Structures are given as C-alpha cells and as structure tokens.
Image (spheres, rainbow, N blue to C red):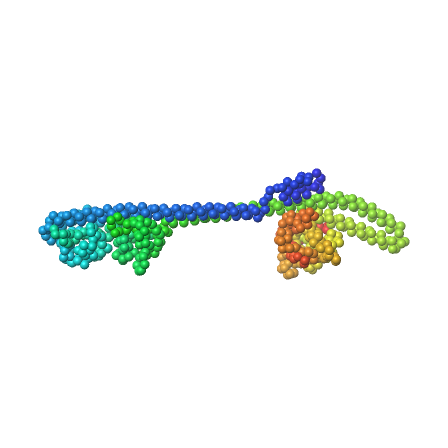
Length: 590
C-alpha cells in the first residue's frame, strides 16, 4: 500500500465503511435519532411499568382498607349484640321477678338493691328502673332520683299502646335526672289480667360507646359510628355531642348510607362525611334483631399516605434513572462527536501530509524544470539583445518563471503540519495569497480582497489560516453555476469586529461569493464532518476542518447563505494583546 492511499482509508473508516478492494463492509453505527428514539421508548416503558405498579398498589391499599373496615365493623357488631343481649336478659329477669311479687311496694329496698347488683355486671348500663302504668318510676337502681312523670317518653308510649313486641330500643335521649345522653332499652310489663302494668327499662350510657371506641386506637381522621337504621346518630368517635339524636345527613334527600341499607345489612362505600367533611372508606353492619348500625370509616388520605410516599420515592427514582440515562446518552453523543472530530482531524492531517509529500516531490521536479527554463531564457536573452521586442518577451518569461517559484513556495507553506501560533497581520497574509487564490478560482470566478485599514493583529497558525482561506475559496468556486455566462466573484474582506470600534476584541475575515447558495437543510448540516453535496468529488471535511481550526484558535464561525444569493462565511479570531513580539507572517509567507 502506498502512502497516498492512507488518507482515503482513514476517510472511509470514519464515514461508516471500511474499503477492502471493491467490497464494502458496513460498520453498524445507528444514527443519533434512532438512539434517541430507542432511549425515549425505554424511558416510556419504564415509566409505564412504574405507573402501572403504583396504580395497582394504590388499588390494593384501598381494597385492603375496605377489608380492614369490614373486619372491624364485624367485631363491633358482635360486641354490640352481646352488650344489648346482656341488657335484655337483665330486663327479662327483672320482669320475671316482678311477676312473682305482684304486691311489691314502691322503691322496695331489697328489690332496688338487686337492681344495683345487676347494673354492676352490665358495664354499658348506667341504670335499671321500673315505670308504673301511671308513668312514674316505682323501682330504680339510682338513689335520690327526682319524681318525674315519664309517660311522654316514646319508649313508654309504644309499650302502653301495644306498638312494640319484645325489646324496644329508642332513639338517644337526655336524662331528666342527670342531664346525660342515654339509649333506653325497654320491655312491656303486664298484670295478671294481661293489661299494661308499666315498663322495665335500662339506660345505656352513650359515653360508654365513645370511650370503648377510643380505646381501639384508630388512626387520625378515622371514625366509628353507632346509628339507628333511620341514620339517627347514637354515638361517635371522635365524639360529636352536638349531633347526637340527629340524622347523619341533615336536610332533604337520602344519604348514601340509607341507600346502602336498602340494598342489604352489610356493605362498603366511599363518601365524604356530612359531619366533618373528611372523605372516608366506610364499612357498615346492621345488628341482628336490633335497629342499630355499626359504621367504621377509615380516612382515605390516611390509607393512601404510605402509598403516596412510596409512589413519590418510585417517581423520583424513575425520574433519576431517566435523567441519568439521558445524561449518559448525551455524554455518549458528546464523545461520539468528539471522536468523529478527532477522526476527521486525523483524516485531514493525513490528507495534508499526502498533499505535502506530493507537493514536495512535484516542487523538486518543477524547480528543476524552472531552472532549465530560466537558463534557456537567459541564454536566449543574450543572443537577442539587439532585438528589443524579443528581449521584452524573454524578460516577461523570466518574471512569470519567478511567479511560479513563489506559487510553489506558498503551496509548500500551506501544507506544513507544525502548529505555530504567532501574531499575524491578516491583511498581509491575505495579500500574499491573492495570486494563489486566483489560480484556484479560475476560470469559474475571480478573487478580490477588501482589507480594512488599521486592522488589529491576531494570534493564529499561519499555515492553517492559509489552508482555511484556500479551502473556502475552493468551495466558493465550486458553488458557481456552470451555466452562468459571466465569471463569478469571490470577495475576501477583513475588519475589526464589531464595526471597526477601537474596543473590538475580534478580527473578522469574511469569504463571500455570489454562487448558488445553500438550502436551509444544507446550511444546518454544513459543518457536520463528511457531509457533502458534491457526491464522490467531495469528502465533506472542508468546512468542518475550517470550523475546527477557528475553534482551536479561540474564535467563532458563522455561515450566512440563501439559495440563489450566494454564501458568506465569517471567521472571528481573538485580537492579539499588545506585546514586544514582531507582528508578521513567517518569512516564507512574505
């Protein structure tokens, strides 16, 4: 393999294939857009799975809360049923005792002592008492109860009028002797003739329920309620004494609980409490054989609080994973771009090295030819000294020969690979390249220079600067339409940026042409390595290498172009600081 083939192999390796004769072996490098879409798809899948998992966990927690509330409601139902059964057994025992002693006196001490002993075995019952047919208490477990008529109490009237059979449980009442809330459990008393003889009753203390419910250790905003089947509040924890004896939902219309009770004695539902406005998950159970309902409500926020914490952690973890993935992707793209730029730089170095070697070889042979031609012209000039016209022709030939020597010197200077940043007068550098640039642009275009006076110096690599200018002029020449009848124009200008101000910190060099211009898509991709619109004639490295050179010098580059109106490439180089160093190009550029 010869040295001239190495740059081509480097170029093709960077461009995605490796040449082996005519065979093309594809290198599998997915485009960035495909990688980005793949990353986005993976992130979407991960987010979807996490969302589905958290949603499933949320539904599981809600279902678990309903099960927990139902289990607690069942336990309370059994406890309440046992409590009322015990009180009812006490009432049956009292009624049986009175039937065996029909002539017992009012407030019989022995009988009232037996009532007190019964009360001691009934923790929920505050008092046991007997009401005569006239409505006055005849026997009482309490001492010193004021004499008041109770014939207007509902539980007394339903037994007197024969509207209740067996045990009757009344709505909550306020005791006329103690002023406390209680629930009356009562049974009818009959004389030997079967006529109404009074009522035996038990006063169940409502505070007992509230204290008992409080001992269950409910969570914040959880609630246990005991109500009648008509949804009259009997007891509640947390306590709400101002609502005892009232409907759970005031006003017209039926509550959700009333509708659920019509559907069955057991159920669950979610609703907002009419008492405190807290949204809860409710489970209810109707006490068998008693017109009471136990209602357990667990705060929805309390149930979902652990889930929210876990969902937040999962969300942050997912977001972090996606963010890290995106960061790694960006990092990979960044390093891939740097690798591509490095490969492009290596390719350009190999290209310039090949050009340099070729140019050196050609220059040696060409110099030999020029030397021979020069000698021949000088000999011819001596013989034609008497012919003034012929002597001028020989003199002109010698001048052209010297220009050829200068052209070769400039080409050798451009292909030099050693990087040497020196303080450069851009105007001098551009002026010295006019002949070379015109030879490159001809015949499609001619090159003109427009140099600003008092231009600041800048520190650049002179050889790379020359290569960049030559590259831009060649691109501008290629951009000239072939069917144009006139010669195109390429103008190279310099100025202090911005606008020639004394405080300008950059020197701007612009290469402008009146060629075909670029489309928006081409302009957007113009600086990408290996992107070319010249087909097999182009490598796509020209503008990319110019851009790399400008960045290496600490400057910036901008492309202005419009289809049909030409292209302008602006290069900005940092202004050189004042120094003792001589401002000039290397001697070979002079």
